[in-house]
Image (tube, rainbow, N blue to C red; front, side, top):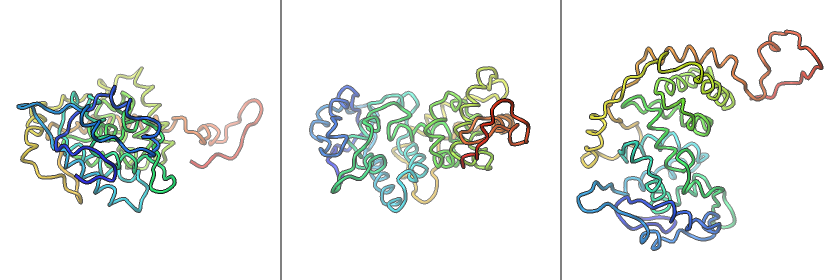
Length: 312
């Protein structure tokens, strides 16, 4: 396994406990002035025992290499929409397994530390790339480099269709704000949010940010499960998809892979929330946007603070 930064030569994906990872992530390692200590990582990692399910590390490594090559002339953020569905497809894990931070620590520090530096680092002198936060290697699920992509794919896919994932991951405000809200755990809400981005109702990152927060706040008084019911996902079909990993071909590079056929989102539920979110978008607070009554020319009481609106 080739890597620009020493990592693991082990061919299986293991887990690296966060207690170990955080000790290794010294300021020098995070800053890129020291490499990941490969042998120490391997000694500290835990690997599947005989008879336990194991996953190959090479497919993930190859996807990261392809992403760095494919988007070398673009901002690294552009790779999120391409890598998220393919990472999800290649790993084939359950949400319970995805909640284990040890898996993501291992991928970031043992399999592809150079990808983490490429995606999140800033160029310094020589070839050094400094990552601003150790959390990109070992952090919360919505912050860690690979975990955030897997969860974005899991929460925004529509059954076997990864198409909505690409739309969501092209907008960093969805990944940085909406992803961490309980709102997107409700599948019709996640699909409705993507629909509004695709239709242009919410065009800018600020608008997405404002709508996501407004919709989340509204969920305290409006139960989305009642307005837009969601059928449970088919756990058996998901498990069949996971069990087929060893026979599955690699995730295609030039077209979207096919996800688990565990049930799509009811179109009526998505449509109901699209209508509701469109109303919320009209009143959602957006930094730099004047209130609707000011845009309509209504007189504003008190001292005038009318200034040119900031461009979104």
